[in-house]
Length: 291
Ligand code: GUN
Image (cartoon, rainbow, N blue to C red):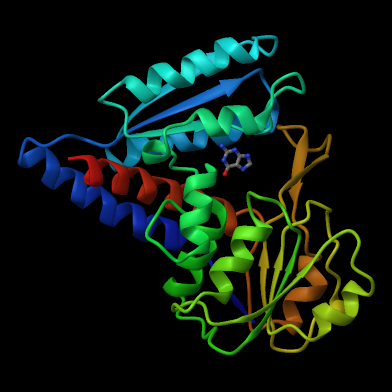
């Protein structure tokens, strides 16, 4: 069993970006600028947004964090998005999800200028991705593809089982893995909450992507010997012995599954850092396209 070390792979990607940004500086060109909107103070969202802002500083991007109260109206949030759309210095806009219940994710995502939608959630960009056109690919599945590429994992002709059908991970992941690219060219099965016998599907998988948000859902009896296992789950479970008060658990029972795998991602240190590296790549791309 070998570890797909997302921390290392993300560092390699971000080091390359840092060099590119240094060259932009030398040439007096525009530096990529990411603007993030965080509504309310959900603990996990706070952590994710802080990590994104930190990564910007590390690679030399500009970043702006806009914090809005949890009870802000949808109209006010849409105004904030519009201001960023109209700001020529801003290359990438992300609104951290989930949003409070009184705000429609769909309305907010649709309001982002597709040319600044570095999360790749706008329907225009989802459509382009579906058709294999160059576009912003959602950061988590994009990061997973970069991780497979970094470790030169053979995917052509393999059977990939994606567990979870979210717009953020499962669905785009299934599109990317089945596309005529390298990595890609997989035969893909999507499993979800209404799938009967998920275990039977998983047992046939050469590659499993677990993205359903249920701690330790994938157990050793569901995994074929030699499979590649990608764990997208990152649930916070209470743990009073830790300073933070919680520990992170993936969707895969790592201890028992790992010995059966050829490759596996750890949690933390697997998919999480790759998501951020992919977001940095999308922001760089946006800046290059405009300038
Ligand atoms: N919430 C969970 N994942 C993501 C993501 O990739 N982008 C945004 N904006 N919110 C998220």
